[in-house]
Amino acid sequence: MSPRRRLITKTEAARLAGVSPAAVSKLWRRLPADAKAHGKIWLDHPAVVAWLASHDARPPPMPAPTPPKPAPRPAPAQPKPVDPSEPAADSEPEVGPDLSDPADAILSLGLGLTRTDADYFAGMTLERIAREYGSMAVFADVLKAASVIAQIRERDDKHRREEGEVVTRELVTHAFGELERLSRHLLKPVPDTIVARTVDMHTGGKNLEEIRKVAREIVSSELKATWSGVSALLRRA
Image (cartoon, rainbow, N blue to C red):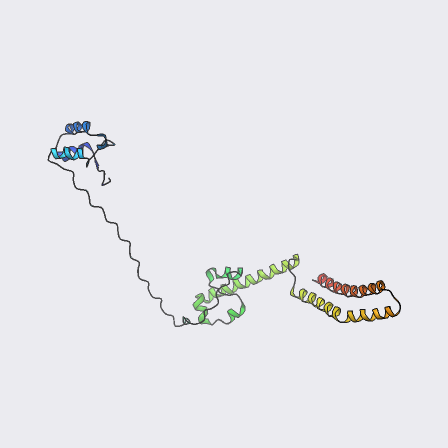
């Protein structure tokens, strides 16, 4: 019960005052309303205290509050044992997993893999393999997983190429080669040809529109040759 409002039964009140239950019943009828609750008597109400005093009794003292249990103190942190094979703290840290790469993100979960390139695996000593993977069996699983992911990547790349989502490096290289050839021609042979034909036509009495038409034909010929080369590359891709 709350220490501020201790409630007792009529039987407990009779035992505390050393009177009969009938005497407590009489007390009950004349007690004020705030001294009673739920059929019980408020032990520390002034009217009840006075009634007990008239019978040479008094309420028992309030129980001492139970102190809260102290929170358990955390165990002191144990220093991590130094592994002689571990690099010094001031040495350059290894490159961690690139979680933006799905392959690295998948393999780093539970396998301890930090990178998937062949140079990383090839440069590992047996001691380092044992330290990072625990056993050669686990390391073999990592290599197998890396191989599977490489195959998935290759298959996905091939699928995207077949669907036309990506182009090969070879196609891009050849396409830029055609554009480079066009640039060289437009900067040197084409202007020279246009100038020579313009002089000849002007000497021969040709008008400006005829000269302009010939210049367009020369430039158009170069553009058509470039487009033809690029189209052939696309058909072979």
